[in-house]
Image (cartoon, rainbow, N blue to C red; front, side, top):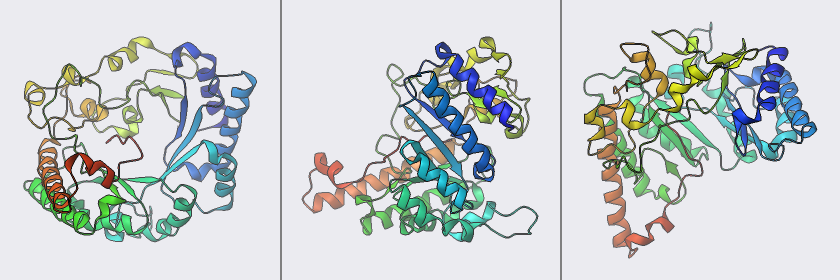
Amino acid sequence: MSWDTAKQAIDYILDNDKEFNENSVVWDFIGGEPFLEIDLIEKICNYIKIEMFKRNHHWFNSYRFSFSTNGINYHTEKVQEFIKRNIDHLSIGITIDGTEIKHDLNRIYKGEGERGSYKDIVRNIPLWLQQFPNASTKVTISSADIPYIKESVLHLYSLGIKEVNINCVFENVWNDGDDARFEEQLIQLADAIIEKEYYKEFVCSFFDEKIGKPIDLSIDNKNWCGTGKMLSIDAAGNFYPCTRFAQYSLRNKKAWIIGNIKDGIDKNKLRPFLTLDRFTQSKKECIDCEVASGCAWCQGENYDAAETPTVFQRATAICKMHKAQVRANNYYWNKLYRKLELEGIAKEEVAKHTKKPMSDHINC
């Protein structure tokens, strides 16, 4: 992204208060790798702060700069100077997928054969956790990753990462038997967490008491994520309802552009996203499913996988993986409750003996 494009995007957002009627704002930098352009990032963030101050904007003391980074350049002098200057309004997530084997399945250096990036990232984890003690990481699982789930979560715990948000990809990449292998890995992970009492200090989003129950549409008929309510801007200055609708994120469909920095947001192109909810997107079998709660979806994958250019057709490739997670999740909580009961801890007191997530994770 050029500086001129970034400046025009910021000016458009700050000039149009009525379109962005929120009490707070997150300026989120996600790529590509944002810290490859730390000089541009510094210039953008300084401009945002100065403009919010000059305009006496209500976001001036209610904003955050958020970064999703691969962590390779985290330790460099310019990045560290930027962090020190903005630490009070900053959140940074470093993506580390687990053990070296699992991480390097996907995160390899371009043009360098099969050289993985794990060693270059893990060296920066202590510094990151020192600066952001409550930081969490996000791990993504596909078919090839399944054998490494248990050891990867435990490995991330051993690095000092206390909250591991982890989910299966929504794309149709799953093979026969993947759900059974997935369930077995989660059961082994559950056994390890309970045996070693990691539940007192650590969190894994695979285990959550709220999932695996029927849905009451009168109270839970919401969109799964923030698509349509979080403006995404690409390097050319085009606007999207989410980065997943940009051309580089799509396999089969054309990009869904809802505006640009010169013309603003086209409300007619945005409108479909503001009406999305579970009922309008789901088949009856999904609505009536006895374990529907916690079953996630991705609006971008809904669009990409649909037979027509629509967001009102829910992709369900993840169905069998969700059901496997529910079975393992039930195993985990039943075993944990039995253990705590034997220790004389009443069911209503369990929350005091288990760590809760610091963040509201969204699986996407």
